[in-house]
Length: 242
Image 1 (cartoon, helix red, strand yellow):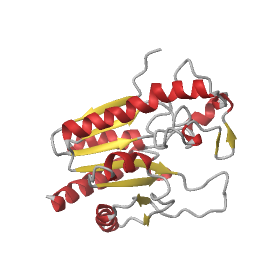
Image 2 (cartoon, rainbow, N blue to C red):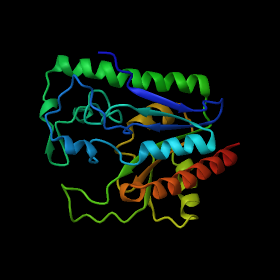
Image 3 (cartoon, helix red, strand yellow):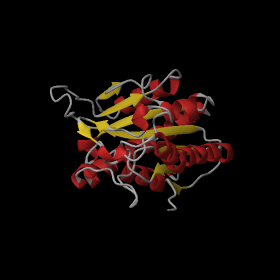
Image 4 (cartoon, rainbow, N blue to C red):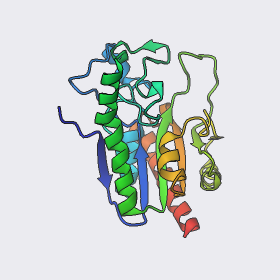
């Protein structure tokens, strides 16, 4: 069954800003049965809540482009290496994903169907567009079922791997908006940064990764606020890089 694993929106102008959203959708193709309660598809384990509408707002208002995943992270987690067991997770935040208990042949077929075309398309866009800046867009929960006592007060987190200069610029700019910014929080980009390691760090393209707190982008007002802040931040950074 044909399924294009990505959606591209906005203006892919040369030397512009590219948004990459690995977890923008909760869609599960009809021929895949995850074996879970459908309600979980509206939970963080299935999708980064708020990411798709925020990306769409930034693309529209600031005339930039975005590539977004079109299937749930439970189908395939595009921000994991192909051989990482969590690229097709069998457990997520204590929930068992029964339908992901598949044999190696089925696993490789799913990777071939979703993971490889997505990352190949990003490579093509980077060759054609040669962006001046990449924004990696994610969101996080203010609590975890697996660790309910953990306090996550940050309104937005900025993640990075080895190349931190652009992220440090982003942190300073975001703090000017009065945001409580987590530097390598709620987790470190040095531990989980596959897409940016492959497509930004390896090619030395300036980038910063953000994690928006989901309760703050759960409605239109919150999404518009973060889209404005992030769009303005991207433009300010591109001017610094020029």
